[in-house]
Image 1 (cartoon, rainbow, N blue to C red):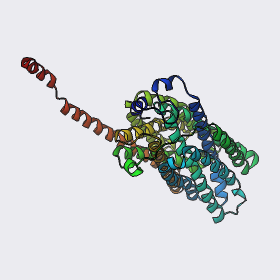
Image 2: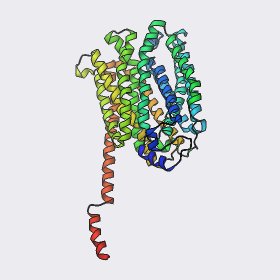
Image 3: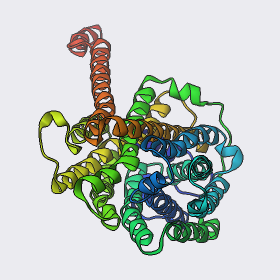
Image 4: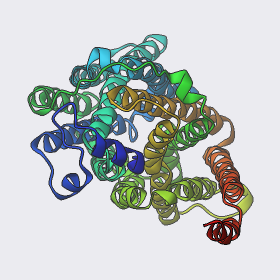
Length: 458
């Protein structure tokens, strides 16, 4: 992530935490600290995603039985994201003061406890009490999730400064695995044992991982920096990248409260099979992410075009997901799954290059390198992702209730369309300005004209 800027820093300055930063050594052999870092961050990617995704197949229908409308269900999903947004902004700014390792393990602990609590909500009376407790528990879960993920991104970028996009892309396999296993596992456990068992089982798994990560995760310390979120977010390119993150997250979050209900109603599948439909998106995203991360690191000039093409492709896929009524195409299960596969790939095209682009932009604009900057970037990334994850389910639940899934998904595709077009225009203008500046600084024939003059003078 920002590999060219990081390469220069890594080769000129010795590491301050015992993790080697030489590009040649890192590419050939991983140190013990790096291996443990990979294992710890893989565990949080997997456990957080599986806990998050088990809700999809059965919670919307369960919440409806408890008196929550589609809009309320969308707000419950969105509450998690809104609290995650606020927590990420705060924790990203204070990462070095709190400590990355402490933030990581404490976030996992809170997330595991709250997942178990969520499994107890079926005993709560229906109506306002159930809805209020859903909001409260999801808000607590968001705090733990934000702490763990903000620390995770920073630790990875510190441990792998020259290959961060490749590492992030590879670890998305575990994110995808959590997304893949969550819906079918949650649907199966719910169908077989009821509401409590999915949450209690997975919450206990997360709690078991806490002491393991306390032992294996290296400690990363850094000197606090004077740089701030405001200085970072006011950079034009960073603002554009924030819009990209928001649009992708909004599209993904839209599917949480709406897709399972659409599948149950349209294709008449039982709850246990609804989770299998989610596999199309999760598998394509997790399998393509390592390749996209490698391309992003090896060919950094392609990142911008991955962002643009990924946004436009995502917009087209959401228009076809319903599909939009104006197309007059009958919705079929095979077509629905195929579009989900394409959405998973297109989301990866845009999501994987964003983090290295933000970090590279910060380096170009004079931000001090170190864990403090990584905390700012990872906090901002998670905050924007969470803001989109709030807008997506909230707006999606409302549109789904008022207009139906077909129109709601088509409208939701407007976010990535806007970000894709904006990114394309920005990068074209940037390339034009660089070309003009280069031609002014080095006018054609300048060297050829000066050479004979200098020769005659001597």
